[in-house]
Length: 314
Ligand SMILES: NC(=O)c1ccc[n+]([C@@H]2O[C@H](COP(=O)([O-])OP(=O)(O)OC[C@H]3O[C@@H](n4cnc5c(N)ncnc54)[C@H](O)[C@@H]3O)[C@@H](O)[C@H]2O)c1
Image (cartoon, rainbow, N blue to C red; front, side, top):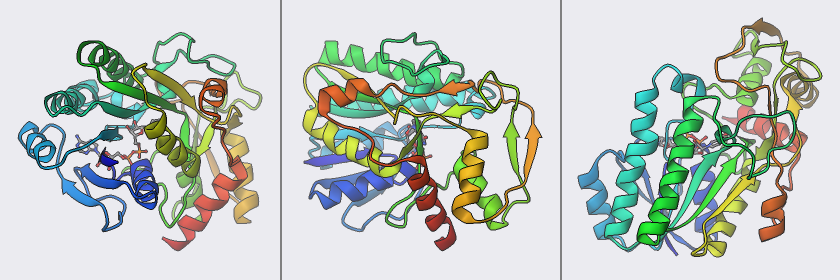
């Protein structure tokens, strides 16, 4: 397939690009920054989704059969300070992409949604659970999912929306390096490596067994596999799935596993809880298991081990 990957130089996108090329898809990456090195077999276009003229040229020049849409603003805390920038990038720029698809008759899109669309609860989240984001980032993901429903109905755009839980781990020399880095595992490993004195734990009085936030961590290789499957399984009927392991791990637990994997002591400093940070976010992945037979293969130790190897070598 000839696939456009927006945000394909980012953490998740670059891993998916590698897997697409391995399966002999043709890939065009559209990203506003160079990010991770991607294989020279993929064409790289530096551009911003706000640039409708460039999008028009790119769609005119390539006859895409599908789009995988990773590009977006991702930091939930930042979205609570600057909601309009998040709306612009995750919703308005997303509409530019959808309009280009409609105009050029590209009818398939796979979207990077998020667990942040849900009203958090103390148990695993099903796709039919209440959609009520705790932060504006989640709101923009939900808005774009709703847009996809309407573009499906009005223009026949087929879509799969994948609600990732916490993407993590590394593979093939590519790992997590956000700028600024706000994700837990890379921050912990920076502390283990001596690049930081300590790790800040934001809130230790949450209603969880050890008082720290619980999340569901999904290995980047599991995520990559889901995207390849989505390209095969996309149909006229909209599909929305959780992508997680179904197992939650607290911040405290992650620190302990990281100490075990790295063999190093990690200093911890207690900090205030962050606005919009839910106490518990864990997937019920049974819908995608039933529909596609997909199940996560990697556990939290594999994730931290792979992230540590990446961190030591980068
Ligand atoms: N990392 C996670 O745990 C996680 C969880 C749930 C959902 N997601 C979603 O998955 C997607 C990818 O996340 P990631 O962790 O790889 O993030 P990332 O920041 O590493 O990658 C995003 C990429 O998109 C590009 N981008 C952003 N806005 C753009 C624009 N307007 N035009 C062109 N390029 C643009 C960035 O340059 C970057 O390379 C995002 O949509 C994110 O919301 C991520």
